[in-house]
Length: 243
Length: 371
Ligand SMILES: Nc1ncnc2c1ncn2[C@@H]1O[C@H](COP(=O)(O)OP(=O)(O)OP(=O)(O)O)[C@@H](O)[C@H]1O
Ligand SMILES: [Mg+2]
Image (cartoon, rainbow over the protein chains, first blue to last red):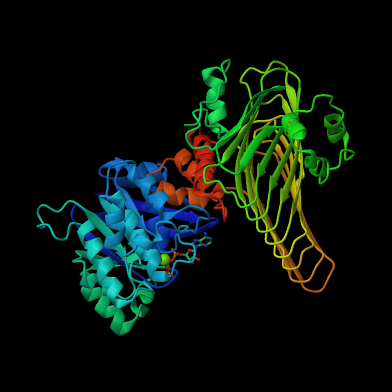
């Protein structure tokens, strides 16, 4: 599904990501861990194609196609989607109107999907304006439910969300990633950023990666890595750098 | 059943332009109509009980007391435009009267159509008597083929009596060679409400106007909303002014201005002369192509107990907002148009649904054309 090779990314004048390699197969969901400011969001924004993340080296292959130079909407059309950590507020633009635009008359039942994540009361509100932390995440999930991407990047889907809503969001994301389907039939892939790991109770994940200082330092079983970090912090990662 | 508007010589294109200006030729959602083509009054009628739509000439003959409303809030000596209109031997325009206690749900439409090169002049008087509620949509349009150009001089005098309400929604669909000089003013009495809405999505050579509302009555309210786009050749000098005289009176002046290369001067002036008055002025501008948006908000308070504020912002489309929508699969043009549409979305408090829908529809047409 996604193959990243030797990727270097600059934000402004500063190189934030150095030599990233990442491979996510069809049907797999990976977890991206790492301390604040290590470059996790930068990686997701770069994969999605945001223009102020400049790729100076390396490439991104998506479904076998080189998308390194493509605009965000071309990547979205090919099946990428993202839940944003901090989506912008767009004054005057109603959530309902965005949902209609995303659906491109594909005939999704917008009111019903909105109800499923308790966002039916928000369709006439300006997107993200005055939304609480949890409401922002639910609005993001709702947009993804309509977009229905094949590869979903989730940037801290559970941060700031209460337990009840984590299970709501977790279930919705689980269905987006076809977690209800048998592993052999599962075609959707994901990449999840989490600090707490709560979301992993709702999503079986296949592999974990730890990012430190703009580099992916180690890979392994996501739960084991998370356990390690919970016990020992990121100290060992930071020490890794000196190896 | 209301009769259809008879406008025989209108081409399909011109009918379309009228529709974009909110004119419903089939009269389905209107309760009365005034249609003036160039200098000819084609139609003036009203089906709504308690309301009248008359040509200026007929009205003056019918009601002697109208003299008291003629050139009273707008001075005939104000400028060259008012002098020109006042000097006409055969004055044109309409008088709309909402008699005491009357109200309309479907608006009255007033259509001013400029078909040939010339100056079209009108003098309108609009009166809402005590306890009445009057809604008007005014579509001003030029034919698609107005030769070398023309000009529209329009005087409008509004009188909102005690406990009455007027909403006046003006939609302009002119063309690159037309100059437009509306001169209008209103007086609002106790508990009266005056809503003035202006929408212009089409090119125009020049518009210059500065309507003034004098809120003389206690607790009277005025709300001006302007939603405009300036094409590269457009020069729009727009303003609105509210004078807060009555105790507890309040005003809100809201503008959304977009330039695609033309000039927009957005003036606003609120004068707080009495304690307990409130005024707010808001101008948001978006520059899509190098042009000019010059916002000049003025607030002038002269007594303790008046509260006035303004906010003005001019900027560009935010890249992160566009790309956010692009990441959902909208291409750049769709994303841009969607954000602009949101920017222009102003919900006007107190405006009937039919009129809000008309404003929305006019902007939607512009959105479909990619703004
Ligand atoms: N637009 C920008 N301008 C300057 N620096 C930036 C910009 N965007 C990101 N950075 C920097 O790049 C580094 C990585 O940021 P990023 O947002 O990717 O971290 P993160 O791993 O997602 O952190 P967190 O866990 O706090 O969300 C940080 O030092 C950040 O300040
Ligand atoms: Mg982040």
